[in-house]
Length: 63
Image 1 (cartoon, helix red, strand yellow):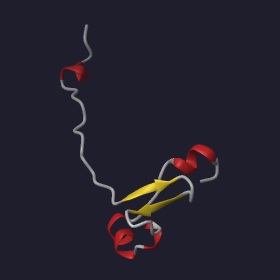
Image 2 (image 1 turned 30 degrees about the vertical axis):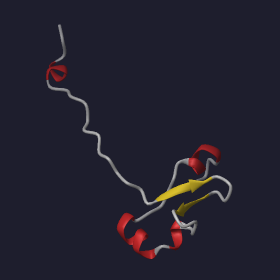
Image 3 (image 1 turned 180 degrees about the vertical axis):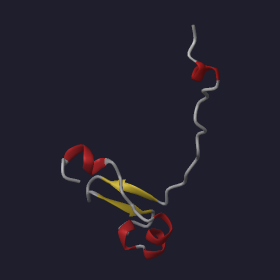
Image 4 (image 1 turned 45 degrees about the vertical axis):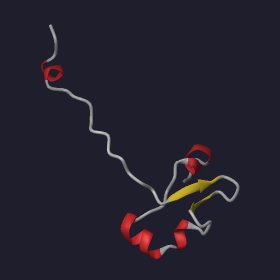
């Protein structure tokens, strides 16, 4: 017998998000394409509310 939910389950839609910053492992922070720290871009912070990455939480338990 197949559970009822499996009749209606379907994969979540994949959303394509363009992130205007990348993680710089040498500097250990997110940087914009021009190399400046993403946390200094006030317009970006207003729009996205954060510039967090998962890099810190993999190495520090208190992030």
